Length: 327
Ligand code: G3P
Ligand code: CA
Image 1 (cartoon, rainbow, N blue to C red):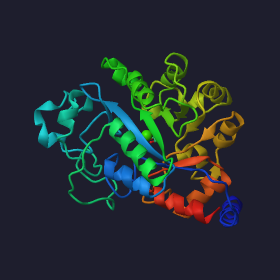
Image 2: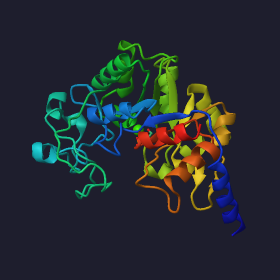
Image 3: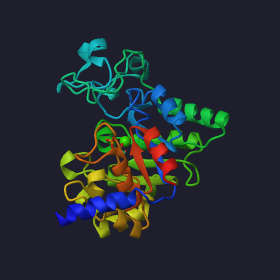
């Protein structure tokens, strides 16, 4: 009971503190309002004044990089209706089995689960003709908007499932670096962070492939089977020191930095800062908040108590407004 009262007093005190300007990272564009990773979602994130716009990347059959969160297509497109015979033995449809021209014929819709239920029921409910886009299309879009509005909104690409792509005979990291270098974006001074969950791939990017840009190591839970990486080790002082040799920051899951049950910091942000790493946790969703915590309270915890350096948000406008009001 004493701890809970202390936490409540802390929340009230924090609501009166001011903070420096951390980064707002538009997580898959602005999917709180428009289907994730579409051009429309990226434009909305730009208009909402995010600092960075995220692009999750996977590869097509003809070695093009497309902006999709999953190696599968079935939960965000009409692939099952359009190409019913193209599923693999596991019943799933893979972006890697389709050419870019084929993928462009698909309609992207609001994320559903495999049973067809919309994951976030109050989000976009229309039937518009949204499309899959390439990484290069999104780079061009953001660069052109930056030029016309005299802004410097950055890129935040994620290399998805490099070990799986490798098993399939594709070196996704090399493809990503080719595009970044063609666009002069492999540069530590540009507004771009490259992110990856697979620590062996992060090390390879820096040490073998010569990546120069800022890199953020994402932290998952081991039981998500996101990659072969041991995340329990990465969260230790030794693990964070290993990360600091090849990356500039970490992207932890919010519950890894703040325990919602005890309402206490886990200490990971402090340890990462001590290792010289910046911290960008994922994902702020005002329609999927931890129990008994309001959107503003969660932002107070992240920015005022934990002092994170940025946050991935499905609702960039909410975080921008919060930061404007709390400066
Ligand atoms: O990349 C940060 C965050 O997006 C990681 O989670 O699964 O949404 O890519 P995910
Ligand atoms: Ca991501």
